Image (tube, rainbow, N blue to C red; front, side, top):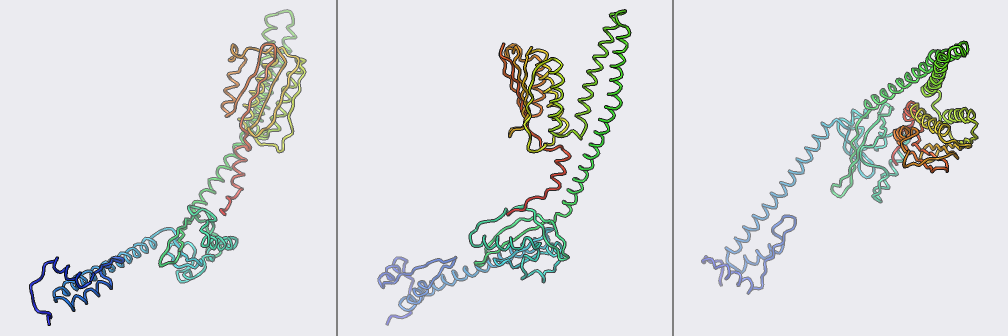
Amino acid sequence: MQGFALTAPRPVHSLRRTLLKKGLIVRVVRERGRAILLGALLAVLVAALVERWWVAAGVVSVATLATAASLLSRVARMEAVRESDERFRTLAETASDAIITIDEQSRIVLVNQAAETTFGYTRDELIGAELTMLMPTAFRHQHQSGLARYVQSGRRSMPWNAIELPGLHKSGREVPLEIAFGEFTRNGRRFFTGIARDITERKRVEEALRRSREERLTELERVRKRIAADLHDDVGSSLTRISLLGEVVRRQVGATDASLAEALASIAELSRELVDSMSDIVWAVNPDKDHLSDLSQRMRRFASDVFTARQIEFAFRTPDLERDVSLGANIRRELFLVFKEAVNNVVKHSACSRAALEFHASPDGLVVIVGDNGRGFDLASRDGGHGLATMRERVGALGGDLRIESRPGEGTLLAFTVPLADDTPAEATRRNAAAGQPLPT
């Protein structure tokens, strides 16, 4: 019987023919880095029994090396995972933000030192507890239903990045937090990690800045009232006295000195114009007049005085507003000056018998329309006249648009629209400060 006698090794092609002749096929299949499977081991055993001893020894050596490599690879992977876990724990423990990981049932499985500091609980008190213990009561049901819905459908009920939500300290006080969420899977289980930053100091600074702005705006309003009162009582009254005295002296001089009488009349007229201008300034500066109704009343009063003095029939339509919108001093003043210039142009240049005026609020802003049935003019030849350039500049500075339609003999229509500012700066600040930020849902 031919046994395991020592003979010279056969060439590779001879060994291959032998294996094929005996109907043996060695099949090596790699699965996750393993080089040898059951089929290869069976082939080794058969070769050891029917072939030379060196065949079995060679295959066994290869199998041993492959198995050792697989084991070394597995050990390396386990070591890498262990090192990764150690790095994560080190980073988590040294982080200044609270880090909390929960499972699908909202049970806390990991916390870092910062979480203990932020919420006042020890690690032993937190591990295994419901995450809702760190939330105000009003948010607990929302969290539970939102998490259950996300686990089932994958649909989020709120953003996961940098959202502001309140936390609950062990002492019962609320802690303002800025939170970001993340998700990962390990060993077939889903986990969720939240990183929460205590923004108590940021909120304190923001509140201090808000109070400071409110105080400055309140002081500004007091200064505006004082300026308005001083201008009205001192400068306005002095100009009025100058105008009256000039008129009195002009009458006393009479026809004895025509040149002096003309100069005195000019002084009186100039004084009256200054009184009117001062009145406009006082009205614009006074914070008690920061409303759309005040602007509408002043427009109506000015138009009535001017058109009545020139015996021009006019209609001023101001539809009732649903609310009395607050306006800042600048927009009130600019709107009134443009309106005043438009009315003066009608009186001085149109030679009209009727005028139509309209002032209302639209979705695009505040709309003012001034029209007349006068002589009109050619826009191409006189676009820069009658103060139109100044009016365009004022309206443009407010972010608005001015439109003019006119033809010789067909009258003139001037309309301008400016964006509506709902609040004065002070009122806007107060409103924003009083209104809380909506919670994400």
